[in-house]
Every structure is written in C-alpha cells, then in structure tokens.
Image 1 (cartoon, rainbow, N blue to C red):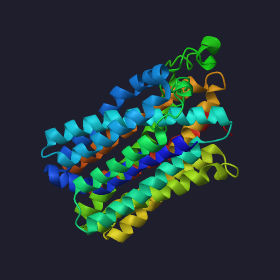
Image 2 (tube, helix red, strand yellow):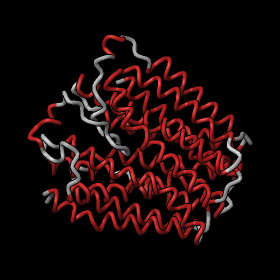
Image 3 (cartoon, one colour):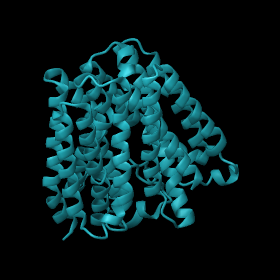
Image 4 (cartoon, rainbow, N blue to C red):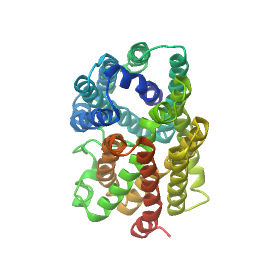
Length: 399
C-alpha cells in the first residue's frame, strides 16, 4: 500500500510541476504553439514504445523494476528544461514519455499486487493521491514562478524528490518477495495494461476474444469514447497554464495555478465518484460528467479574464474526472468476470490515444485559428461523450 501511494504521489509531483512550468519550458526552447504541440506528441509516442516492454520486465524481474524506472523518469524529467529548440525539446520529451509510460505501468502493477495481497481497495485512493500531488506541485511551482524561478531549478528539484522517494520508499526490501511480484496485468488509468501473464487464469479462461485482446466492435466503441474523454482531460491539463499566460496575459504565478485548479477538481471528482454511483446509474454519471466538462471548457475557452477562466477550468476538471473511470467500469461490466482483464486492456490501449493526440491536436488547431478556438473545440468533444453515453449504456446492458 505504501509503495503504491508513494509511487503515484511521486508521479503526480512531476506532472503537477510540469503543467505549471510548461510556459517557461516553451519560452526556453523558443517554440510556438504549433511546435509545442508537436513536441508534446513525443511524450505519448515514447510511452507507447515502453509500456508493453515494461510489463515484460516486471514479469521477469518483479519489484526491482519500479525504483529503477522511477529514477530514470526523474532524470529524464529534467531534460526539457535544457532544450533550446523544437528538435531538442522533442527528443527530451520522447525520453520523458518512455520513462513516464514505464513508471505508469510499474506503479499500477504494484497497486494491483497490493489489492490482491490485502484484499482491500487501493487503486482509487492511489489515483486520487496522484491528483492531490499534482495540486501540491502545481501550487508550489506557481509560487516559485512568481518569485522568478526558472524551469531548470523547478524540474531539478522535482527530480531530486522523486529519486529520494525511489531510494527510500520504493526500493524492494525483500528481494525474495519482489521476485514474485505480479505481472502488470492491471490496466492503467490512461495507458495500456501490460500483457497478461500466462499464469493469469483470466487470460486462459474460455479462450474469449476479449481475454486474448481481440479488437471487438463493442470494445472499440468503449475505447474510442474513453479516448475522447481523456483527450478533453489532457488538453486542459497540458494547455491551461499556456492559455492563461498567452491568451489572457495572466501573471506567471496566476497562470501556473491553472493545472492545480484542474487537478484539485479532478481529485474531488475521483474521490466522490464511487459515492455518486450509489445514487445514480453509470450512464447518468457519464452524461452529467460530459455536460459539466463541456460547460466548464466553454467558460474557460471564451473567458475574457483569468479568474473566470480558472473557474471554467475547475468545472471542466470536475466533469471530466468521472468520465473515463465510468467508461472503463462499463466495459468491464459488459465483458464479465472471465473476460474483464483482457477487455479493459483493449479499451485502455485505445483510450491512451486521447492522451497521445490531445495536446498535439490543440496545438495544431491553435496554429490554424487560435488557442481559445482550439479549446472551444474541446467543449464540443465533451458534448460528444455525453451524447454517446446512452449508446454505451445500452451496449453494456445498463438501465
């Protein structure tokens, strides 16, 4: 439990600092919005390269993988601050993405093992702690930016804290036990699950297509819907500070608060999601979440004042936070116990495309029109999520 929470907190520490310091990284690299969008695409491409291989490494070497990939992630997290062009920034973000994807798989595998070992829910709390860490890091970075601190000290400080966490908390204490850590068969929140281990009974049960990772039309629909939800989420997480900084000319400290506002709202939504499902059905929650995300996105995109934009960003974070978990839950319910792991792996693999193309799509649209127009398009995508929710509900058998 402690390793899982610490791993997610360390992960959120970096990404909270990253969202707040991105305008400074952009300035240091000397890139425009379109070039930044292309560079951000490298994060997703790097993660796609590393995630499946990380699952193999965890199968083979167990718990030692987590501290190793965490240290590598911390080191690569400093590289964007050293970039001086779109080429060097893209290369730095490719390495960052590869180590980020590896760490995401490793911390989720650790969480899955903790749930199996303790028979207690861990993952929801851990993902919530990720969002809390994002808030803390974003606010801390905002204060540092307001004091004139640049990208290198911020990302270097975050890297130091992450390395300390890896060495003190994440390092395996019992190498014998760590060799028996489970395969990364649990899916990530935004990235594909590692390949099912041959010892996983669900991977062999019934020879079902979903369990073997076959792309069925129903899983394709769930995956595309989840990808749209993740696109909305990552668009605001990545571009909110830049929007306040460049579109609304907000002070550096205030602009850097935007990712923290979004993450705080997301944490609230994630911690409250299970409680809400006791009162409303999954389809209703998905519709409400999509509409709330759309309303917040529209307010933030069209705002004429930074504080109004912050309110919209918070509303968008609250709405979108419940969308992807609800979709994944509906997909798992549709697949049934014997097929659930394989089905969720397929859905999350497709869904990760939302994280992959979201920031780049916003950057491309911003270059063609403007950043507010591009973010207004995000509101339209949130409406699509709400509109397709009843269709997904009928397929999943929800009433």
